[in-house]
Image (tube, rainbow, N blue to C red; front, side):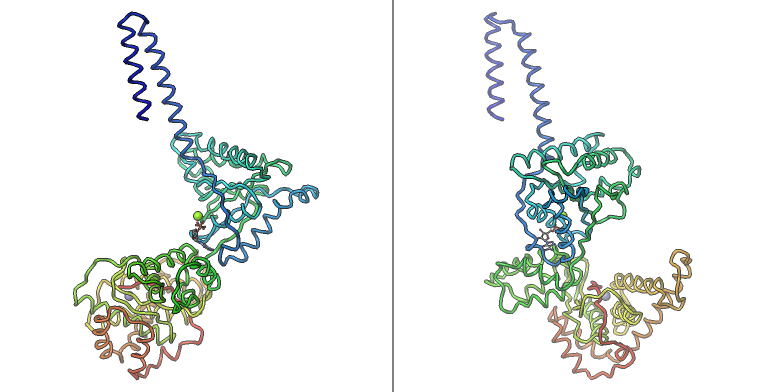
Length: 513
Ligand code: ADP
Ligand code: MG
Ligand code: ZN
């Protein structure tokens, strides 16, 4: 750049000098030069804009072995990809080629990884772009970028002597939402162009271009995208179950110096609802904690802190007053006692160190991943959610604003009960259920459970007071210690405890206070 300006400066100086000597007619020459510079600048800008959308030709080098869990998704995907691998046979049988594969599922579950592994598996070149990149203010730009993308995919495959290319379009819902719903037609043109490109492909074409796309909102996609010959394979990439989480943990923790105390199985059990990306972040956080503590290995306790960090956010600098700390301790003990009574052994730890938006929380270990809940189990979850504010009430005779989240959770559980026909209303049609009737029943459920929880908590009043002091002192209490304390109390717990069943629900870990 410096050089360029310097040259221009010198050039102009020489011209002026020549002009002064009347050797050249200066004006026409200056005009020509001006025109040249203008053209140059325009070209430069164009180059810059197309460079910004240029997909880096990453060599993915990711194999299916490096993707944890997702066994059925991987199997389905491999089957689909065999269409590409055995193209000759497909052609000889006259089978329509597979042009698009749609990966659906929540963020961070490994969709991008899958697309990259697909490229490795089929020995294709890999290009990726994100739906949001196609959307610009100028109409037609998106469509042009799609054309460009396909052109480049073919060029790249040829250059690398490959028979096929995989184009991965992340966030396809941005351009592939139902047509006519957007305020301007840019999206439509982009989508139309994508469909045109896909329709134009045939088995005999070489290099062949396969489009893979990802979305977490398959429900809003334009139906034209899902028609045969386009994205007619949909593969669900779901949050991993416990086995999947263990598998992912093993993959992402590989090569990290784990202490012998580390029990990945236990961590997998604790991390219900975590995505692959969150598990990766978890291992990374644990390593950062090790670094901060200047430790050589990563211990189980560091993992525990890292789970808190990923779930709740970084510890905040907020410093509650002593009075507040005590209230938080009382509140959390309420949650913990009810949780432990109903499902012994599931309190992982109690902490009153503020993190993210929470002043404190009880983390629970789900016994097993669970997808169905009985009425009893839902009621138990409501009990746990309400127990925080009820403990405050028991101890202080009043409540605080700290239970807002608990109430949101409790009423959403109650709503689930009503909708699933588990309330006094019996089977209901959600669509035709008047809002007031729903509300009334939800309030009834909450009031009933509130009373039940209060009764169970009552005998613990004095003990909560004493133990809360200890929690304030220690800041964090682990499950084993808490259980020892529970045993020492000898409180004869009846009603709720006896109602608890052997296999109880995996309560979503919920922050409170
Ligand atoms: P998505 O595209 O579904 O949002 P990504 O494939 O981009 O998710 O995953 C982000 C990161 O999370 C990956 O780079 C990887 O480190 C980790 N990850 C996610 N899912 C898995 C998985 N199933 N196995 C191993 N790592 C995973
Ligand atoms: Mg992704
Ligand atoms: Zn709470």
